Image (tube, helix red, strand yellow):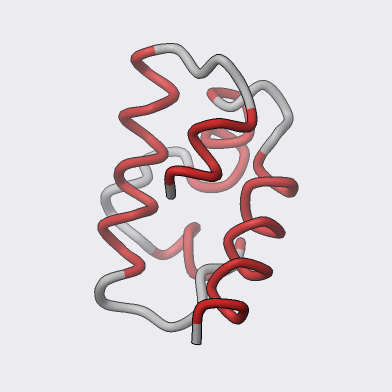
Length: 72
């Protein structure tokens, strides 16, 4: 997640949402848009999360996938 945090100057609210994603990674192998839409912790689902991240959700999910597989 440190790499994700370094991608942008995330606001406090954005970091809070990114931390929620990080917590889900402890329990799930794959985080995709469908999974995010099903999580109660992400009210508003993908649309809301992408709005909070100012359109960066796809890049965050892509970076997470890339770096998780590198680490394993």
